[in-house]
Length: 254
Ligand code: FPP
Image (tube, rainbow, N blue to C red; front, side, top):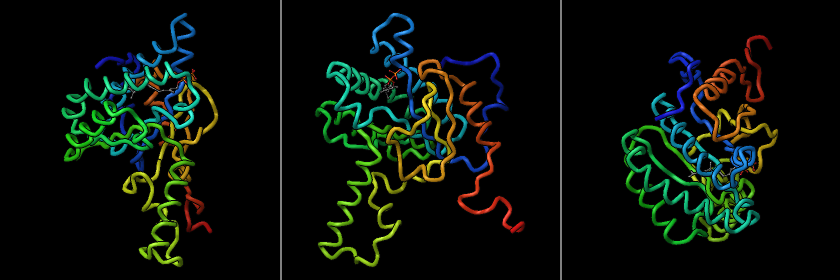
């Protein structure tokens, strides 16, 4: 594992109280490559290295849930075909090569999104790693792949409608829990901290339901350069937030 920063100490990298689920929008691979006169795909390759390092660091820290936005539904249809094909090949290689990292770190691997649209070879490798790691009880790593927050909600709404139509769900029982139960991974808890790299101030259709009360941290670091020090800054910022969930910080003051 590389990426250690001279400024990072063990104390910097502790999980703040209340942080269970960290989600990251990994942005800036293209800019990282362009600024070096390299092809965008080279940035994605470097980005895959950061995925391995940050995943390992988070698992070692004892984080419960890590979700990474690796490919949006918009990326899948709007990026040039050769870039999407490169990303799929990179993903397939990653899943094969990082099998040992996942198993050695007791990580449970899952995906989120419309992966059924992927080529069979990619789907098979994703499924193999999901199955192999399914009994691991350390951190859960989810890769959001061909994922969109709106698609997830539309897909859940369709399941609700079908269940009402077939009599498995009463109309009066359609509530937040009924929708939650039909999301791509109903067991996934809400996001506590959403990190976005490369400076953009938007959520880009990521986990729209699950970030309702999530804290947001944006840094300028491009994803291939994101290291333990950047992670420590995000965790420390979260540790200084007062979460209210629509209530009061200290209800007794009311
Ligand atoms: C955004 O950067 C990143 C992506 C669309 C893909 C993310 C992919 C990786 C981090 C590597 C592959 C991941 C795995 C799990 C193997 P961008 O290309 O939009 O950057 P830009 O905004 O600077 O152009």
